[in-house]
Image 1 (cartoon, rainbow, N blue to C red):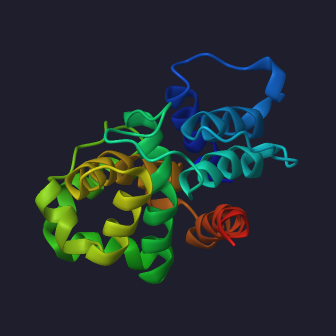
Image 2 (image 1 turned 135 degrees about the vertical axis):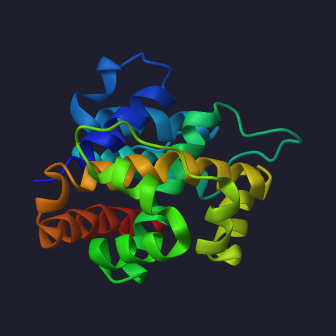
Length: 199
């Protein structure tokens, strides 16, 4: 079992500013539900509990229906942007052949020392320069996320450079000896939840 759903839950709590809403129910589902409902003006009821409920609320409101404003959607904050890029980062890992392929790609992109700090449970996560992130991710996908959350693309790259180390860290709880298949299964579970909400 990796820590992927834990990291998403932590991000969701941060997006809520630390307050937990008891009315939404417990667990990740309730927290994500609160975050996602707060991102848009439209109330969206999520029937699902667990991670699915949380992601559903967040992604549902990111996906549209909220009022366009010259600044940002109501309830939007930097932590909400981090939640919004989680599916983008997980999709990127899958496109590169899962955890092992993504690690190899990051290594070949000159991020070997940072990568080591993300995978090694005893080290703190080194940040990744935004410039190197731009070379790794599809500019069109970045643009789509930027439009959804109504921020400059530079902010999306910044969010990825913050979240990527946390996701790699959460997918490798046993460091080098983490089972990559287990990590890929956990990524798929989260992506299945995300895609079902985005349909």
